[in-house]
Length: 169
Image (cartoon, rainbow, N blue to C red; front, side):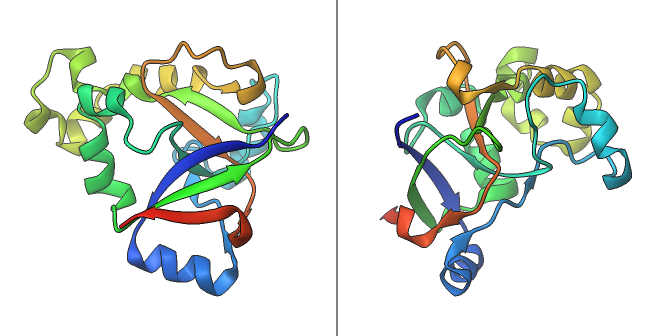
């Protein structure tokens, strides 16, 4: 597969760690509810390799669909921060494939809820079907046909500093 450019937001602390290590290390769990000892059994349901930790990216710097569905701001508030916008250049690897899943299952729009109500973690966590649909939407990048409303790209391997540039602060 050819090289692909993806976009990832990091906090100041994570950026400093990237500079010190010379790599952006995967740190976001694929499914945070699966214990490490249960991981191997859990991933057998997928017909492709699934890494426990990933770096979550976008196909575009400011994904409009994420904004329209009330997800971009939520992501920035809870997880990513937004101190730096990085452009990462990667190639898909057969042994650890890049994956894509549809984050729209986390959208307040999907459930007809106001964003302020949806921001409450207990509201989102009460929808177990949401999480399962999100996990099951996962597909390898090489098979992805562009059909997801809010695509989230999962990179399962470290990304060298040589393949990263800051495009926004």
